[in-house]
Length: 348
Image 1 (spheres, one colour):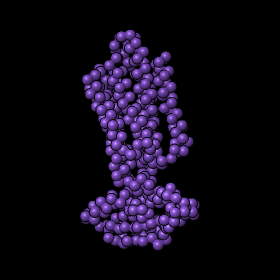
Image 2 (cartoon, one colour):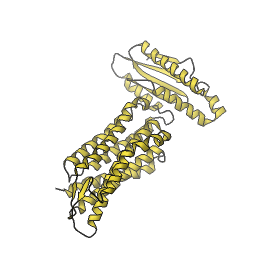
Image 3 (spheres, helix red, strand yellow):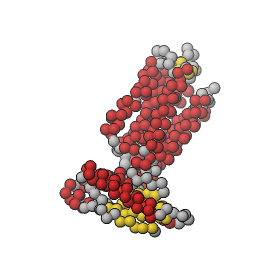
Image 4 (tube, one colour):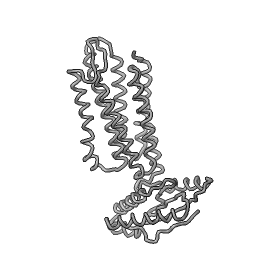
């Protein structure tokens, strides 16, 4: 039995949340970057899905001229856009990790194949039942193949989260948790909607998840340095303040580094190459496995690693790892180098 009132409340709430996010996009200077464009594509798809789903429920079982054709259109649209949304999520997760459009163009045409098949089957559904049926009385019902789009959708969503988890050390620890928070309401809403036809919660769950991602984007802009991908100096100060007040057997230790002849790099090759140098340093520092610490861009070409260490030996191991990683990079690129006399500030 369809609970139209609850469907209207849930989907209208989801649309309202997404409209608020779209209005807020004009306040951010980051809009125009690819990850932002992908994100707002998901927002737009969510609005479209809420509207289409609500309309499909409203006309279900209604016998007016053109309604049965409209039912086919709306339900095929729902299957198609739903799978498209989940595919776009994987692209978003990948780009947030690697920021590599060439990688996306190379890999994701193949990743898109299951989504394309579902879209094609949704179109075929107009002529023969695949995922659903529309009776002569314009009543929607699922077929036994209805589970296939659900499984593929979940595979895409889980793939995005798994990708972030596997490469979480590359991006630091600020992306995995938002991805999990995004998935949780989506998972709960979709399971409830699958078990109880006539109850619409999945897109409200998606909207809540997208809002959580939006909040993360704003937070990321405030405490993540855009060039290096490391934490900012302000975040570093707050982190040190918090850690210094904790009672623990470990000792707060710091490592400071800078880029050798950074001014010369800017003067000889231009600021764009200087920016690339900072980006490369960020990649090296993010490769350090810090279970209890952070790496930050302190200012200009100066970087700091703060770590809760068991002893001095543990810190010296990190320094040695950095030297080896820097040597490998310098041998490979010949672009930049750290100062060889990496200064260890000792236990604080």
